[in-house]
Image 1 (cartoon, rainbow, N blue to C red):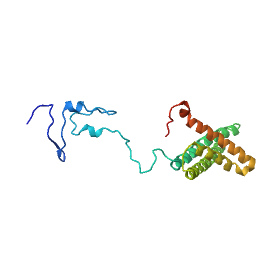
Image 2: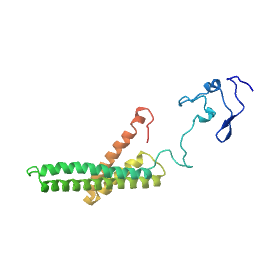
Image 3: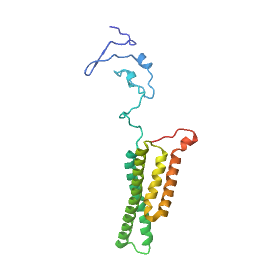
Image 4: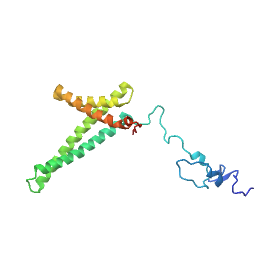
Length: 205
């Protein structure tokens, strides 16, 4: 048996029987561990198997690394509902305090302010949630129809959302709604491609 600490032993003993070959400190020191913290030289494993040069997640065949519009629809609708509820509650509190400023602090005033908060919160949550639902539905339909996902889908979905939401107000109202939707979706597309316009690749999440 060789007692040289720099030599490699033929085998080792693990918890479940014979383990793989062991490596000395000298051999372990020459193995590059890019992106990893230094490992103990007494670790009974070949560190070359721990080097990750590929993605650390597994995707189904044909799946994209980014979430599609259908997956983002749930987050969009829920986020808009919560945002609308918070904004409406704050606006209702402001309106309630303004309308009851001549009343003394009493139970009727508290009830009136609470009613205003809940009414405004529900109204704004319903409004923003409806807009998010229409936008997400149009986005998914356009994406499936065109077979592509780009900023054109975003602008088209925003425009159609404004047109449909304001359509009860007649042709003029639908036109104004479409113009507002076109403007907002165009600004979002411009912001989303700002890095690309500056010359660097944009980061998408």
